Length: 503
Image (cartoon, rainbow, N blue to C red; front, side, top):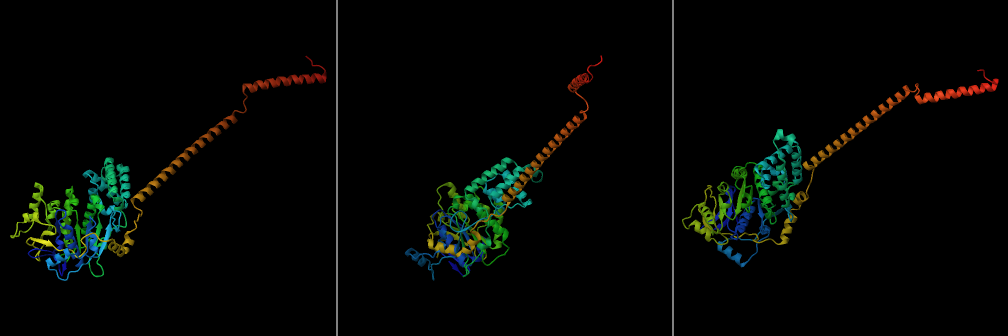
């Protein structure tokens, strides 16, 4: 519940309030399933919204979007309101926008392959160090040749191009093994099966559209429908990591603002860090440390603080710890670690209190005005003014109608000319040039054969002409016979004229 410059989150011996000017120091909401993390998330998010701070959160179960609908008055709610002594209570929904990566309701979320970059993409594809090196070469070649990598078919075309021209690029970029290219191509199939084909593309997400407030000055609650996406943990985790990195790289420095510019909730945070390479973890730690100066608060939501690396956990100053269960030695160790992270309260033993917390109860410690962690309070979390459960469809329809302008911007996928088309066009031109060269070669051969045949015929004709004055033996025999016959005929004629010949 928002009160002036703070969000009233819970009450123990004292009210537990999150100060807006300390909210960009990041935070943690932890606890076992069913202990009330989602309610805490809603109370905090609606407080930011009322303070004019837009937020982002993922809805893994379908009930977070209930923030768009006012809560319902029940006897149980009335009892809670009376117990907290809340004055001027009203049920209110928050201005929401619904986003979706996979098929479903909401604004489509897309980013380009180039925006994702080789480091996060290698994590998404679970590549080895060598394969990541090949992927870096692919991105570098694409940049140098001004080939746009927008969607997965662009990346696939670029991988095939690099494999086919590996000998040519080896001296400039390094060796590219065909086996590594094949492994990356196989990994792309798994990402496509998880919905990656829809995720990568254009129009790509403009984060400025997440920083908006409504006409009343309330920050929009940007809800990502993650009910199907949570079954695709690779795509889900890489999108959240990309978003955090993009916020860090694009937003200007604000110094130490009176309130955050934007608050980002990471639900199911354990999915983000499972098997994360050291290089990527180092980048995330750097972002978490420095992004607060850009007015961004990051809040991780998970079952146990042990799900988050110590380097990141050390940056999370505002904490709400719901109940944990400790049935194994590892769980008991996690409880002790969680208890030791709080500033002790002499009224109770923190380690015991964590295991005794009921639903809606939490150990709470926020930063005070001086930026110091407050003494931990064993507190009960306030109810949200919005609906605790999933919303009715009519309220969802209102959200969809109010974001029609953004749907015009993001609704229709655009497939402009990029690496896939450019390489296909280049291959077609190369094939046409090769075909033309083959035709020219065939024509030259035919021309040479005709010239040779003409030369042969000319030689034969010249030879025939030069030999026409000579008589062959047959011709001479026929000629002699003709002469003999001629002479005999002559003699017969003379006899006929003169009567006889003289011997």
